[in-house]
Length: 303
Ligand SMILES: [Zn+2]
Image (tube, rainbow, N blue to C red; front, side, top):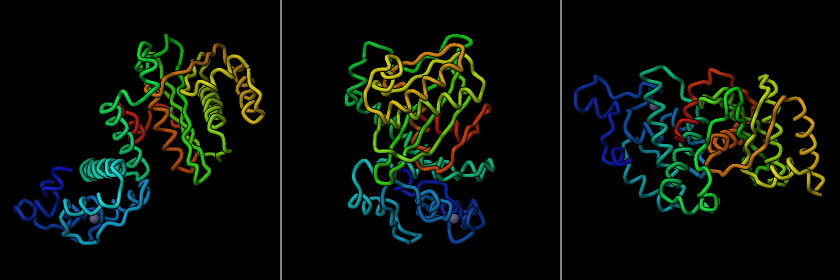
């Protein structure tokens, strides 16, 4: 953003003005000069991404406008955390454009947004580690994701909820003892009004995915302590969630070896990112190894 605000990014317009390129035209949309504002905000490729931004975007439609001025304008309208996301999205758009122009890899709007959100979350974790009460609480325990033993697969699951749209996104990531992602999966579903039920549904979806990939020995990790307790102890009275729990227990019988653990959120970030991706994406997708580069990029930007 510092480089963009100082108009230092090597856009076609900047390269043309330095007589490195013969024309300043945007190579993606071929409509107008590729200035910084065009590249990050106004190009049709950028607009496709901004459509999914988690806040209102109405950028001034002037291609020659100074990026710093635009940011100052936006800072008046958005909250500080929205600005953080906006800066990250600018960066992932720039990254995505370069990937497209130089490596021919298509920019996927939803993944571009997810990647930006993952970058912001990683940034916030580093800046404010003590604000996460769970991290503080379990500071004596493991703080990073740990791989399963040989021949066992670890299934991390998570749910993300959009209360306004009454939707839930479920994310599943299955890794082996060498920390290799074997399966990643997303599912979009209706939100029934209870977050823990959504978390239980994420566990159920994790089992369905693990079963379909023919894994026999699995460790399931959820950051919802209540759900793990319910599965392990079968205690609870609320009917709604117990339907899902009994379904989980029935599916568990299909595995040779299965165990359930509660894990801090800081160790469940991959599944969390996928759950958020699922929330935006209305599809149900299971990616088997080799995991597509765009999905890997959502996961790897967390490390
Ligand atoms: Zn363009």
